[in-house]
Length: 432
Ligand code: SF4
Ligand code: SF4
Image (cartoon, rainbow, N blue to C red):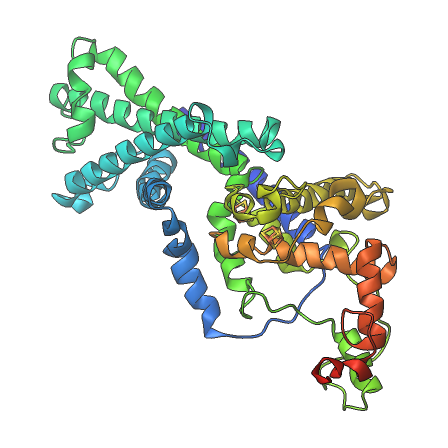
């Protein structure tokens, strides 16, 4: 009974903390602008293929396979966690075993196979990050907390998987010594640990089994809370993010409706019926409240994998631009503003803004708008959307673009071409 009360208390605390954090994230995202969503069957295709099927990951097969093992392990081992939770609530031990009969050992062996797969994949990922030191994990934005965060998650997954195997090994020995223990059949991978535990007393094995059970379930609950503060939030948010992702062709820039309306009016064309008349508001984006809610959601969905940065031509040629950092900065600004608002502080009026205090003009000006980052992202994040909006603000609200660009803008405005020749001379090259 004490164990059950303790379990309910631990579960209650975890649910409370997760709920609180989810509400915080949701209100942070709602700082952004609401955006009308064009319905399209492509959205569900994206969820199924890109988020669920991880199709874009497979452009790099080795990390894709390792990542898929961890992902499948996360999804499928959760079925075992369901048994853990019900056992904890009801005070039972291996609740599903009598109901599943001969299927139970098959499932348990499959879970153990996945656990070993997850463990191996995590070890390889740790080596890639910390020993081989892949260049895309060594960028300046990936020091301190982001690096520690990735390592914490990988190490946690390793110890959680080890706890399952040790618990099953002790449990199997106890089954042979005590008829009160529900038989699970022979389990291959945890069975390899049996020789190590066999010489210990029954009371010690009961302690090991219980300690691993508690360690695993508390670890899972702590992990669930921790994930909401970590880049690993992508394991949940990749699904809505792919649903809300742009369905327009890559490279098609979104026109600003108010500008389109003005241009059409100047050309004597009828205005689009879906563009409301009225104040233009701010052109482009200076801070997170100028960005759409989907962009803010995508910042929380970023896995910090760096595939975008490793493909970015500006980054490759030594410019101070990393599309991964752009998304991390949007998330950091959201977190800063959100925590200020939650504490009754000024929030957006704190004297800072996304542009200048988090992302510099040098960074956004370095972008070639090539879309390589968009193409590379495994969860359909579009860092270029953020860059374009920031640039629009600088160009249209501040006339602060580099002098050469301003000259080009002026030429387009007066000559309808980037060059300084009048439109009437456009065909002059055909003469003589
Ligand atoms: S669009 Fe800009 S940020 Fe993205 S890869 Fe190209 S240059 Fe880099
Ligand atoms: S934006 Fe996409 S590609 Fe870039 S780090 Fe985030 S998840 Fe990876």
